[in-house]
Length: 112
Image (cartoon, rainbow, N blue to C red; front, side):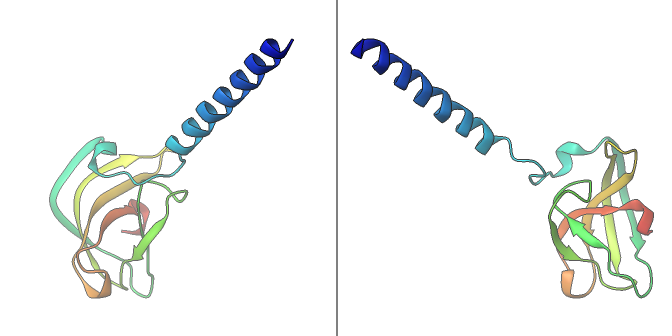
C-alpha cells in the first residue's frame, strides 16, 4: 500500500513540475524580433502621425508589451513586416527620432 501511495505522489509531483516548466517556457506575447517577419520592407522610413505617439512593441500585436513610444511625427526605419492573426500589418524596425531613438520593435502599419 505504501509503495502505491509513494508512486502516486511521485507521478503527481513529476506531472506538476513538467506542466509548470511548460507553462514557464510558453509565455504568451514574448519578445519577437525579425524572425516573425513575412515580408522584406528594407530601406525605407516612415513618419508617424502628428500629435500621436504610437507604441513600439516587442511583437506584432497589441498583446505584446510596449517598450517605448514613437515621438509625434517621429521617423521609423522599417526593416520588415508581418501580419498578425487578425490580418493587421505590423512593421519591425528602429526609431530614428526623439527620446525613443535607437529603440527596435514593432509598430502597427496603420499608424503610417
